Length: 239
Image 1 (cartoon, rainbow, N blue to C red):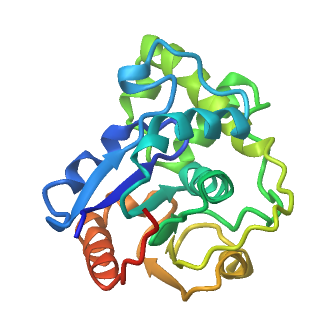
Image 2 (image 1 turned 180 degrees about the horizontal axis):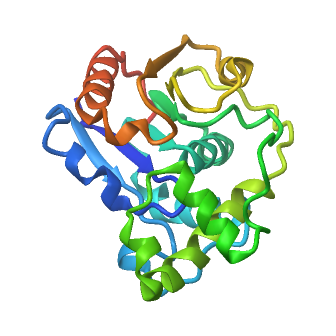
Image 3 (image 1 turned 60 degrees about the vertical axis):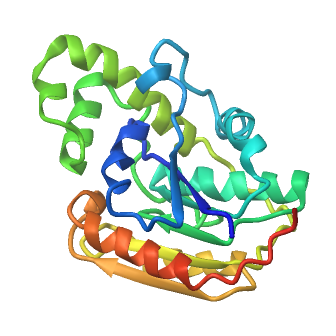
């Protein structure tokens, strides 16, 4: 049996490296593939995306040739939105879907944006809001040169998410779907359960202590959940 490829998509401003420590504790049957988005990491010199559609086209080009074996997807925050749209594109173009979807730290895509529009804020206010959310290294706020490099990328990512317009695609998955959530995150419960509308498979919500960036505090527990979940997958994958 082939290894299950686990494609991981980062949150706004995040790079593929946020998932690097997962490799040592993932099951030997799972191959980690952290997806590097434009504008960060090894792709630092590339311009960030203007919108979700552009991001999905780029991600699909990167992983499309690897979808002949079983795969799962994990995304956190912005990464969850990209995961949903990417899965729709894969199913429409290739007629296959993941063996499991993990959506972390984000409401279902059809739920309206109900928070402050961040990407239009003046620089000082934008930085304050980002700092309050947590998850961003302190030195990025204290070092002016780093801030000048990082903040435009982060603002672009927020624009990508906040300008997203959901539309019905008549696509529903047959795989199981797990939603991960921080108990102290500002999330409406109905916006989490709404993820269940996108699958005919089983659906569950797993909650962790912490706020929006709970994934950094519960690495072992989250990877254990992934290991256990994917170990029970019955693979009937079209080749």
